[in-house]
Image 1 (tube, rainbow, N blue to C red):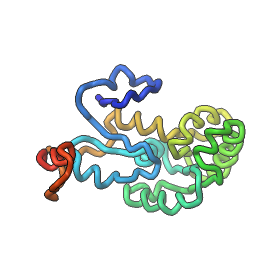
Image 2 (tube, rainbow, N blue to C red):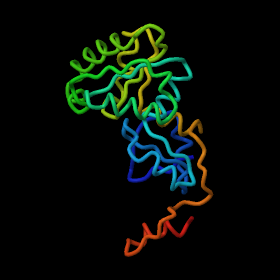
Image 3 (cartoon, rainbow, N blue to C red):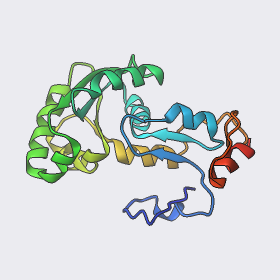
Length: 195
């Protein structure tokens, strides 16, 4: 079960299983999975990000490609795939010039742009294409019928992988860090007391 705070509202088939009083997992809502390894080191619950969750789903189908916004993401995603053990399955990364925000602002342009990028990403032996980025959420469903390979929406994959407990299990029994924290707000200091 997941605790959804701050009035997060979305439609999902998992909705009945999402509301409890405890945190049972963390989903990092950025395709670069910033802080993934640090959070895992400190948390006694499963932690994943949009990229790792997408890699898990895509690799179940075979070798995969990624379509995402921004050239600068390519080397970072290659390093992340290597760090997570998916570098042999990642066949190609296709970047588009438009940012996620620009794609969300112009859906007609986004569908054409993402369709072309997915066609370029459909390299030989690729079995799935990840549409990577929170700003691309929802577009996989819109372009799936235009592309012959399965398209994985990273936001949907993040939620599905976390809810279906496909995330690596935590290695700690308690939350916290090994470092002593001083002069921190009580809410943060309490993390170090739970180790």
